[in-house]
Length: 102
Image (tube, rainbow, N blue to C red):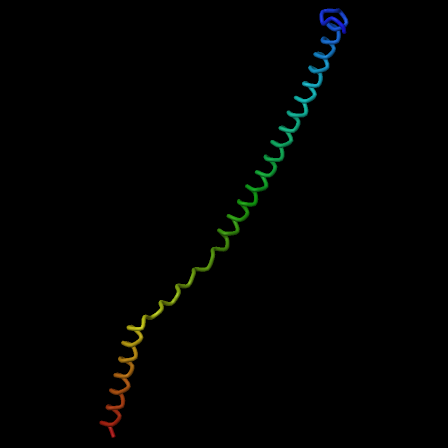
């Protein structure tokens, strides 16, 4: 077993540290490249989204949506009964008028 204080082991440690430094620099370059690509993609997508939103807003301003129709209110049973009574009363009155005329 070699003594860790020998010149050969010291040289091996220096080479190992130099290799680690080079690999670290390569990794950092790859990391920064990935970040730059992600920022460019985000910037491009943001520009596309803003252009799309602007076009949609312009189109909406040129063609406003048609006003919505209000839904007819549903009549309750009580309201329907009152309406039926009014209709029957009007019919009876009209019949009485026709009998009085003849």
